[in-house]
Amino acid sequence: MLNPMVSEYHNSRDISDKSLSLLVGGIAHDLNNILTMITGTLSMNLLDLDQHSDLKNDLENALFAANKASTLTNQLLQFSKGGDPIKKKASIEDIVLDSTNFILSGSKIKVIYSIPQKISEISCDPNQISQVVQNIVLNARQAIPDSGIIKVSIRELNNFKPHNAKSDITRWIKLTFKDNGPGIPASILNDIFTPYFTTKADGNGLGLATAYEIIQKHDGCIYIDSQEGMGAEFSIYLPIR
Image 1: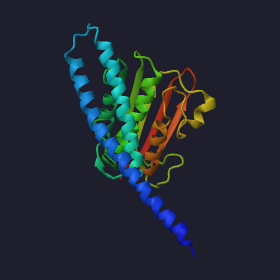
Image 2 (image 1 turned 90 degrees about the horizontal axis):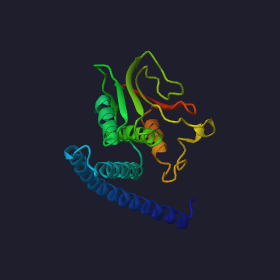
Image 3 (image 1 turned 180 degrees about the vertical axis):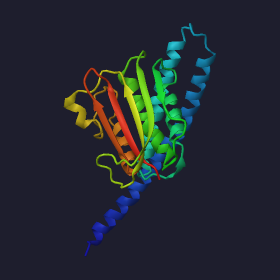
């Protein structure tokens, strides 16, 4: 029989954890609303600004910082909710385009899209999958120069099953994000999805770890292929349901 003192401790800890989650989630939600207003205002001012203005570079840097802060608040929201996806039918094409363009707004990085005219909808949590795309694209943006290129593709695969897939479904969506950055050293390649692992001085090590967790909770798979000096390629597989 469980000691009453132990039981009381666990119950109080559960309440404390839930209260902390509610507090973190509430703060992150309010902060994200503020950041949305900031990024929107900065984006509009950049559109109206003369391309040769001395303010252009400062506004672009401010927009990049605001986007990065928004990504962090979304990660806090993700963890405060316990990570369980709230699924509904959604267009993966819309999620990818909106999320990629959002993170790269104000950047000179070129995006090359390869998307068929018709892609099946999937059952997913659109906010969580958007967070995955944002984290991967932001990772690429931080790794490559402003003259860099990110290739984004969407494919529908039939009679196929990814390696290590938990689901027996044979219809999948494959998302690919390939950049022409410096690549990832082989010595740390196995660590990039580990929580709090980062090589950036101002990094928190949550971006790719969050992406991995979200894809796992969607019964999907995520892989990284990279060689130093040859860029990095992320491949994501999501079941079509």
